[in-house]
Length: 358
Image (cartoon, rainbow, N blue to C red; front, side, top):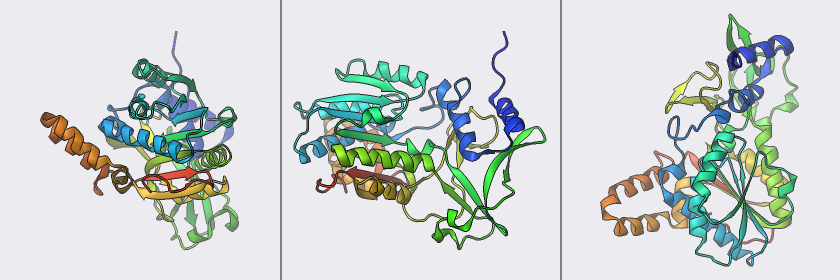
């Protein structure tokens, strides 16, 4: 029996039927198509890219202690739900739960929000001896809005779909995906958007400038903030991106085997992501009613939480591994590596005081 047609061919068929598709729709298909989507069919970590939890256990330990401190600061609420969005291999959650055992009175029900059946299976193996009560969900939804919420999202929002708009002589036109000469390519929608659809700070863009926006990201951030504001707890978002208005170039990229690839070539075979607009995420958090802290560079955030001190402890306890521990510390906090490009953003309820690390 023949298998499904290559994803590129099926996307081309879709375009033939409905016309050009948005960049957001293309990203959704390339990443999450049930038959051939990148995340639906493989474990990408290590093979194509590496995330902070895979670099060092210290990262997850710091985030676990962040959750403990937020819990302490809010009077130790009971009936807590701990949620991770896009949990990868489960490494981050395993490290967080281990660190959180320093607060034995802190009881949490863990929810792993993961759409990929491949990654769900890996997470179950990673966490099988954690002793925690864990359930899996494919999406974050209103069922998670009924009690205090502690939420962590590390390198999750960068993979949510974006829309792209290009500045032309006739105005801002959405960038679309079309089929041309038997290959997928980019083209501009023939009609320009009304000027009110583009933020005023983008008006000075030169012709050819690109504006990227992620309605999916800001809608989800606003919903998370609303739950935190009403029920308590906190949300911590870490990702790579920009905190100002950004430039006028595109940030959409494809990565395969730890190298850049063609965004439109062989969809489903590589990761797609774009820089997170932290200013837009912060504004979404405020719309949701939360107190927003940050964004702050990941390096400074982790140092404020005590990462350097934890590295010193580990190096003293494991002299033979001191060099690798120090290298991991540098990778997580050095400005030339993950310390500046990666940022942290937190949502807390209005009565809450300062946010740890901010």
